[in-house]
Length: 358
Ligand SMILES: *Cc1c(COP(=O)(O)O)cnc(C)c1O
Image (cartoon, rainbow, N blue to C red; front, side, top):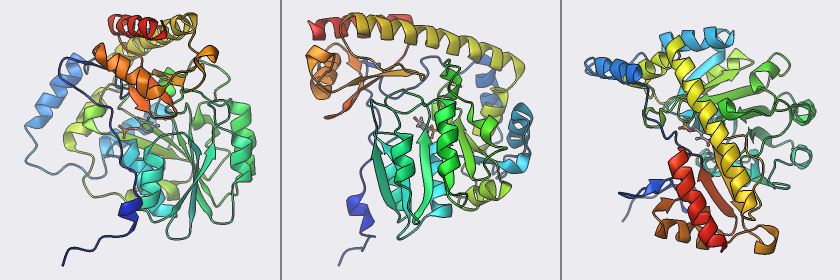
């Protein structure tokens, strides 16, 4: 006899992490190329001395600091072990057997996984021109829909929907369906037509905005993200479905230190630099003949397609990069996602892209 597992495990796609390999340049996981700020590392080191104690499971100080930063009430906040954990908590809080969770595809690969783990049914609406097709998503809402993920900017294509379109969509979503606006890359957005989801909270009681310390804040290894809900009941539901103590004491300290004035200033400079590199990388790739959708995140996307129209073959392109010591993230048959990095690493990527186009 062997242990009996839930049948859903057989259907579960594996979360494929961006690969790393000693000596290779990793451009596969949308990480920040810069290490945590020196004073953040200092606070982490100090906090390590208290690791014999359990963390504050309510993350009181961090919650308070985030509430102040955004001008919201602490009860609107829920913290998670990365915002991917909040995605799962929110599915567990709203959707089960027979319920539908709606999202664009291709989008963040965790969405189908957390949906299936919750026992719910994923409903995937194809992107249109590498961007969320919000009209089609609104059409796909049924009475079984319980949660909708909108990833803005979208991982892996980098595209963002404009505020006006998003508002039009939100107006069409029944108020008893939770909308999870995943803004993991919000800090990299420069297009003014892309709305900051937090400004929509007063208008939509069924909205929660997810943010993370993993990308712009450079703390991917710390695992801390948060949601800000319009309705405190939504944040409460996310806390109820959380495993106790998942946000560690060290993670809380690191996140808190990253919110002080000095950190915010230094991190903003890094983000500005990466945004500048995103522009340079996009323009240079286009000059080489690649079709690159306009990215609002810290990565760019090359879609599979006819080379004459700027398309690539994802698997071949990624293999060619790897031969040149560069790891990018290939989605077979779909495209390649390349994280924007330092000038030197982006130059290496451009050199490879030039040869592979050749
Ligand atoms: C990276 C990412 C996250 C969050 O990652 P965490 O490290 O779990 O905070 C969430 N959503 C999207 C779309 C992402 O790309």
